[in-house]
Image 1 (cartoon, rainbow, N blue to C red):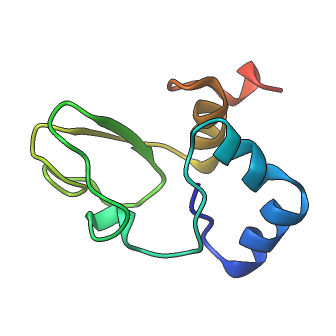
Image 2 (tube, rainbow, N blue to C red):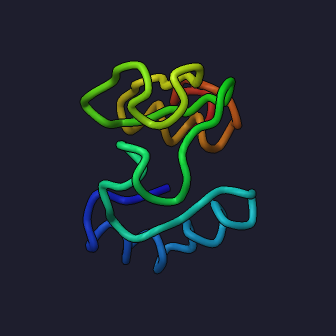
Length: 93
């Protein structure tokens, strides 16, 4: 999880969400544009998949041209993080 703003970052820390993501094997970082263009925290390898709330998607955007990026809204991305697969928000409510 990479929050869009410092305010959301602090809220996630204060609510304990950062710990939940890290303990579940996820990544929690400060707001940055790096991952969406493969410039920070590594890039996707061939065959790897990611779900993103970015507004752009094209082959090789986040790494290897053979990787896959699925675009979603924040609610679907959050539900997917909890379920470990692409999921509808109703599945975690």
